Image (tube, rainbow, N blue to C red; front, side, top):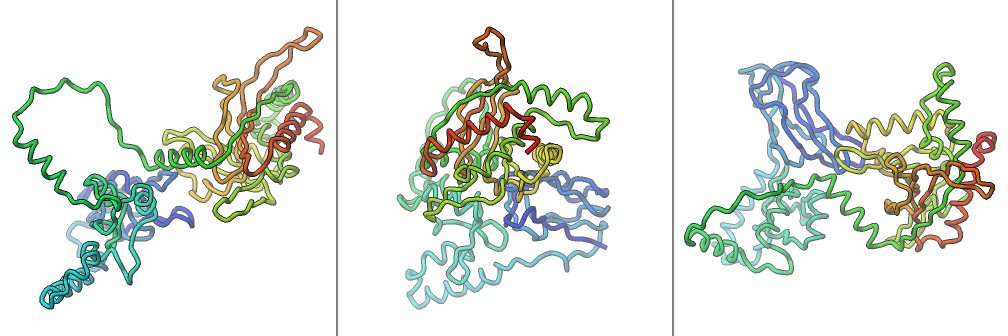
Length: 431
């Protein structure tokens, strides 16, 4: 018996996903756990596996299409099987027929000119409300695309991102609704122009930006454009944490401990230090005129992935033991790198830690993940000389904070307290 495959909902906040690539095409045999297609949200990508075996009989969308969650995407069944009852009806068809009939009536009565916008957008409007995906709306707001000229190609007559891009390709913006004459004229001129000698092969490659890269770019630009960011740099004697790390590494397996790294130790110290410095464990909500102070430390961990920089969250990190935090952080980092992390885990952080120390970076300026008020950069270990001539391992820390939310003194006090806790890690463990 044929079965419908729907677009999964990956997290409560996700309204739609984009199909990035079909791995099967109509007519292909499908086994259980075969990947049918890949899809992505703003921050994660996923594989959709078949739950039944059979033949892929029909697909309703193509690569690059944005699909609302829980809508049918394809049908799996047996060749020759009647699937007509399973094919979803397009809600917009009846409305298009009604619009066409109304247009004819308006022309007959001489009133067609009074409703140009409604006819231009067709069934993209429902009860006066524009049917448009969040991603498309954001793009239109940034670029002033003229949505009244949009031709919706999304599910149920919805305007999606590619429809807005089509407007931009034609130069149709609110500021300049001039007409599509220029592109057409230009094209005709090119057709009449004499053939030119073939240009040499381009020594570059244009690669279309992924949706995740676009989101990262927008977030980072907004962060640097809208915040008053300042970075403080300090360091601490890493002798104790390096000795503790060596001790755990030598005895962790027989004690049933997780693989506790220096990064885990820093995360633990941050989680234990932050509750006393609420200005840094907060969100600066400029549009609402408030600062949101968090009762728990929801610790964001910057993760380098093939798709770009992502920040999964360990919620309530201050309540966890070092061993528990090491386990949870590794789980969420692994899921993020694999692209299987829930979108709900990629938001809600109250403070973020980013570590470039493993790459030999001695100091850097981390960029705040808005609307957080601060971010900590972890640097590499270098060796310094004491007054008596002996050397010690020093680990650097770079704290960027939003000067709109707090001043330099409280930020410096937090950084000093964190350095003290790490330099005296044995005492921190005893608290």
